Image (cartoon, rainbow, N blue to C red; front, side, top):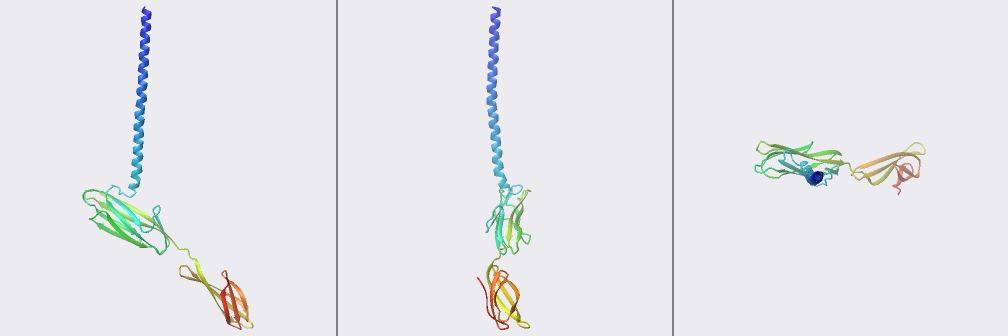
Length: 247
């Protein structure tokens, strides 16, 4: 009987131990799920904060007191404007106070190295200023809007936005060409024929090409001047009866 009793006790103890282990595993399982949910929630919150904060910081001061934005009458692509020499750009700068209560005292500077404008403002929100810049030479330039402000409570802020302006020289093409000629009399029956081709260019300027040919009296012929075939009919010693570009 004693052996049977011990066997029963051992069996009960084993069963109890098994049940405790099973419950512990269940607790670990659900506890792990809760930890994973909290971890995923934390990661999602970090992603949302990061994605929202980065674009705002690009146009917001270091202390979050002011925000600045630049627009223009030309298309801005990836922070750049592309124009040709002689064109102008009208920039509009909006400086906005993000603080509540007292309006900040703001020093706003806009322009480039050659045309910088400085403003001081104590009233109004937002502060809007415009600047027109004419770009006469080709190159790469920067339009900068920078501001320093204080909110009257000992806090200061600074912000800067930059737009790059790529100025290209326009492609110059030939829009027309004319030919002219004259003859210089030499000794004997030889003469010098001077032929000039004048090109009219798309920028309003002109380009001339001149060549001299040795001819006989009363020569008639076609001559190549800078890629142009020019027909010239001469008469006597120095007369030119016809002169024109062929084609």
